[in-house]
Amino acid sequence: MIFQTPEIFDTFSCLAGDCPDTCCAGWEVVIDPETEKCYQKTDGPMGNRLREAMTLDADGDCIFINQAGRCPFLNHKDLCDIHIALGEDALSETCRLYPRFYGDYGNLQEAGLSLSCPEAARLILSDPAPMRFVTSQNDAPSRYDPELDPMFCTRMLRARRLGLALLQNRRFTIFERITLLLQFATRLTALLFISDEAAESALYTAFSEDKQLTQTLSALRSTPQPAGLSPHDTFSALFICLGQCEHRQRSFTSQLEKVQTRFRTVPNLPDNTGFQCLHAHYYEHLSVYHLFRYFMDCAWSCEPLLQVQHIALACLSVYALSLSQWLENGRSLSEKEHQAVFCAYSREIEHSIPNQALLSEHLTLDLELSAPALTGLLMTFP
Image (cartoon, rainbow, N blue to C red; front, side):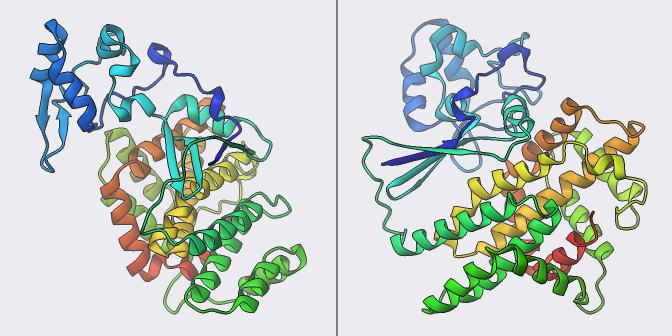
């Protein structure tokens, strides 16, 4: 099997008690069946404590009963009592793997690090060079999925490679790159169920040459917004939608409210030049992270455009949240503070299945968040 990861994958090491946050609070972690069986058989005081803490949630999944939003085994030093008493192998699958994630696509397995972890976020964002990926071969058998069409999966992998090249093409601003990716995904979606290899090849050629990319952007700048819509309508709809999501922490809700209050017009401020170049590569890495982690879901859903709309939404949201924080700090934002905004968005929005479902619904149904509307907003940013 082919195994692919970002280059930084193997450099991750948990900060444990030194972490500025904790992954053991604010989330409901499902205990997988195998771990539950082990906990039911564990002897002694720890075994009794484990069984007393386990319960079933509304979906019938086994979870621990949180105490004031914290896992009952998270001690006063923000360390895990299960890990201390029984070792890492005794942790549930989610706790053992986080912040690592895995994806299987036939004979290809991929793994990465979640941006919601502060140390993973530092590793993902800090290097100004384009994110690099490494591949290797292992002896693991290919995972057969009867619902995965190998040919269609190959087409989507090709699309993702093109998307990666677009997002890392630094001849254009990150907002221009995401705009181009939206255009590519829109046209690709139209070709998905048409057996026209020539048209698909022409599409890849058109989005592989800088001259044609420049012409595409020029044409978009002269294209009017959908009737009755303005970039501000899209910006407002975006943050109203984020406000409807469930939030772990009140501080995140407060930041969303500050953005809506601060930017009553499109946040292309004439005096934000100092922010434009502040850790600019962060937004490239954010978009590449989302593309790598989520785009291949369309191998099953057949919705590449929706996945790219999610990338645009994440990048626009984090940019506005960071710009607001920069202004609030007196036009200053340290690397640690800036990375914390990315981390918070990932934890609050990206890691909630209900939130992602809500966003997908709005991105699919709302004219204000359609691909043309998002393109109009993206084109207003520097």
